[in-house]
Length: 246
Image (tube, helix red, strand yellow):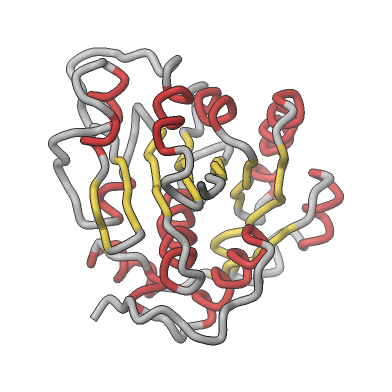
């Protein structure tokens, strides 16, 4: 039986590209590294992972599962072979408890190589911290985001979970941005990837497909591949998967 590794992708606030990173890292792990991957939207109050993957109004979501209405297997949506996701409801008629989130994910033990959790930036992050084996912290290189990310890092340390490192997103190399070393010194962890701002990301969002599938030769995709190498501890296989988006 394969070992399933659960990685939470967290940020202190919205707007830093956490969901885009979740979908694109998942796509690279599946396509380029041949892994079986499940993405889970754990942003229970403001989800949008499904829209990144072509689904606007999913019929069965993690909300239905946590509410006891459906088994978690019925909430799995196929994007492509070996690349699946569980969406959340944009609107659910009642508040559900996420206390059982971790136990629900245990049903997938041995069935996937990686489960990536798109975490909430709110107090709901506790569900991700509880369920994940390790965490990636996503942030942009500005002082407000970096300074408030300190609390997220401390929360992860308190949980005794592994913090794999930091992911700097939407980097423009402007003079007003904090330097990589400044960020590492402030938070005490290494930056695993520096992802440049690319206007094509907006095209991928409009197309509802991960950027890395639409633009496999672009620099940003190379950065995602490098991030996936950090996550897996593997180098990119010389023979790529035949799974293409076109």
